[in-house]
Image (cartoon, rainbow, N blue to C red; front, side, top):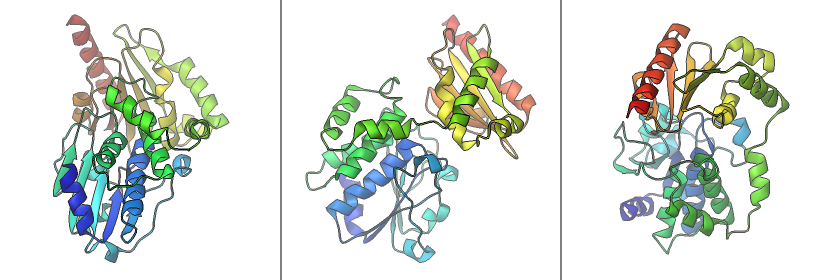
Length: 313
């Protein structure tokens, strides 16, 4: 698969790299880290990164603005996007050829080439593996920083079960590059005062059932009161993780026409549940969407049933 991907990169003069909407460090890291590798290895090629920006992550990279005509003979590479509706900048469909590189469980097989490894800790880990498999490829210090940020972000600083011996090995290779890890961590985990205050609200108002399911509901009014956007709440999902007795938790965030749900688990498998409610993702970290608080109640009850069954086994 590495050879197939590299062959297609070599065969195209224009390469446009996408990732998923509502990006996280792994989305940015894999997307822009790959662009750094291609630019350094093939300086004659036109390489672009596209998609919606997250203001909290622009310290990692800025996206390019390009015309539709650039896609006509281009290779589009989609990083870290399990299904097509979640691809940021849908113009990838205009490309001559499409490659999918992803570490989520495959629910949507798209593209001319698919490299999907659900056991990988992150798509950034996969991009480093692609680089390491071909001695002719070059990796810049900036590229190493981006890939490292992606791995750190998607492993929860190497705490999540997806972290493997391979993950540590690749991270060890990346930190040999002279980027400032301390400064990177500070930027990745910096928090506005408003977010810190909302975190306090979450800890004071979350619910915890006897099944080990915890949840918090952040309405539009609460977000307005604390002056925090729906997008920014993603930085607080881990707030509940270390509370004793929690097996799985739900983060409900009300938006204009829907309620976004972030689902996390310490053991029970939850990606099937997320798929039932207009979402999907990893075994222990998924996202979903509901359209009323009554539907949110049903989702929460379903998660409690999953945790009961988990305990019984």
